[in-house]
Amino acid sequence: MITNQPQWLESGIDGAGPAQWYGPDVPDGDRGPWVTAPVGSRYCRRNATSTRWYEKRKNDGRDDDWALTWGEIRQTFLYSEFTDGGSTAGTLVLDEGLPVGAWVLRSVLRNVTGFTGNTSAVITVGDGTDVDRYNTGTPSVFTTANAIELGAPSGTQIHTAAASVTVTVTSATDFTSVAAGQATISIYFLG
Image 1 (cartoon, rainbow, N blue to C red):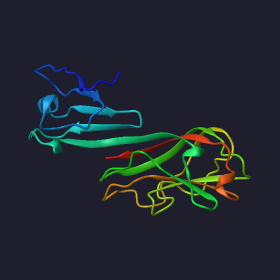
Image 2: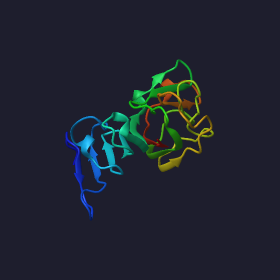
Image 3: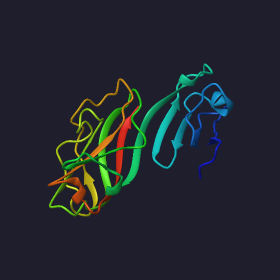
Image 4: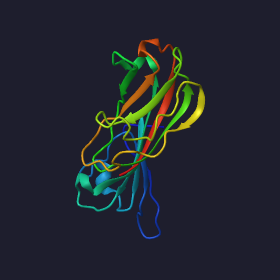
């Protein structure tokens, strides 16, 4: 259950100990219950498209008291959401990007409905500049599959600046021939 206020459970032998928290908001180290949480507490920020885990590292009453430890960007997309580049490729910028300091581990597709209507379709996942920064090779998305491993990141894994995520599906001929296709992508990263 996601509410507008963080939820937590405290335990400890000698007073309040570190707690597990969850909610939809980014931790705000200088307000409300976030400022009173003991050091070592963990917070899971969960919404419809992502999961991010934070840990309270210090208690200065500042936003940087909470540090991102790991996260997942997850989005389901349809072939009709892609922008046709006027040739064989269609692109889609995901709703959520990667934050500064993220270290990308892996990209995975699930619940793939094949991108049919052409004779082939392959996928790459990048940052808008490096087309395959977050995967290796060009895995096929032409047929239906429960899951597809997209391979290790082929570009720089660390993010010195926030980055958007661009999914590219390339068909054999013009992208307008693609008549079906859907998948859920997950990109896993450390903070």
